Image (cartoon, rainbow, N blue to C red; front, side, top):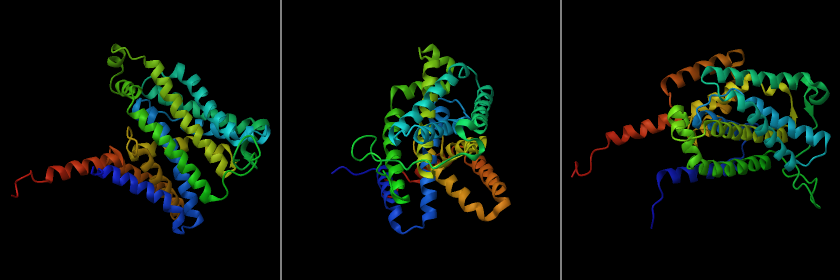
Length: 330
């Protein structure tokens, strides 16, 4: 009988714990945080494609988060579109705008690209803030419909989810589906090309890798995940405003990815869950919350440059070095 590896056992235990979490009698507040952590996991995974694998550091994830969120909300509010087509439209809008923005800007390198994404994020925020005829400006969009079960047929209009527990499982299932696709992507030829671009763009181009195509594809895919997160956030909160999609949110997403371990599958999820709970639990410190948060991030990045996943890997290697060779104690 084949033995399960430690990684497989840990994965199964994590899935079991995630599935059992709402059934443990936790308070509604902690379930709310858990839903936000799952949505933030999608945001961190999206940035991980762009920065962790393609090596293009972006501060525009909050912008794509907002584009997906507002696209879905406006369609459901003004056009009476069902949740599922609105979700597809939100993802598609984020990806198309990302591809259009990335085509001229992904030729930039280093800090120039970062500044370009920073400017783009601010432009999107200002549009959401000032286009009051459509977005209602700083007042935001309220009364967003509850996600429905089916877009057509006798079940049209029936609520897909009812309450926090149901929405938690809904977002969890979507995250697991995304992870299945993500796993195949990480082990695909496309990701090997992105890794080559990340390591050395000149060498990758000499090897025949089309830099522009792969960069735009990665940028659009990462934006699509952010758009998906935006739609799920809209369906859950049912109120959105430009205040949610600021540069501060992009920085938080970046910290989630780096803290967990960029260029890994599980790392961004660990970082998203950690940061989401950390920011909420530190509310008791009021005005000193962001100071403590900043110092904690400084020391964690200083002493764990590879993130939490890097620290786990280093610890495992240290234990292996400490383990006596076979037969030594015989």
